[in-house]
Image (cartoon, rainbow, N blue to C red; front, side, top):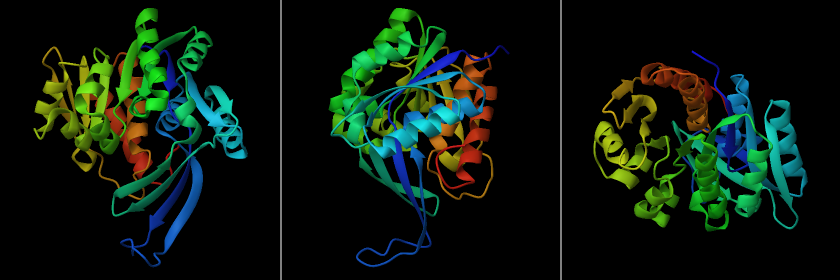
Length: 297
């Protein structure tokens, strides 16, 4: 295989407040937890995992003009991510409270400055990365009206430059809010669409994963349905269907597992790996992510 090209990742930078609960949440009372503050955000996490794999990566994002934003950028730069970020006075850097328990996590989000990401900022990031071969977009950028133009510009600019594209569908609840029809129109003809089981159900209905993937190839050239502990399925327009099991590891915290999976998949696929090998590498990274607290390597 060849080496994966530089990837420009477009999307969110977040401070994660991760609480790993000792038991079920006691609503209206106290629940003991281990609590950790760390860098997060789907796009930033994916960029960090890509850098850890040795892939050249540039992140286009927006942060607040605050200490949290400066800390998040410094972390990413230390990890090897080239950050093309814009600071916005009067808007806080995004924050997410993550409640993790029993293999699941619930997120309470303040998007903050992520809503200020602009199409012009995307163009600046692409201009700063003339060696880029691929654009990866966090769909949170499309799902928020404030940043939607930036997400649409990322896909349009990639087509203009002859770059391949991928989109991570992000989250089922905001997908329902914007509607499947609009979202699928925005991502039409992307080279790779990543969805988890819930997102696939929103976009393609309650079918089996291979059938969901086949339905979504009407929009995307390749679709990967992430099924958590049940593994993942790859479907493309040529009719190829590949399934891969998940690695059997103790689950500590699933935060960022999908972002690690995406990084492993992209690095392998863009380097020339076939579907089975790409899914295997993605599964390795996802298993590594769920084995520890936090969303980053």
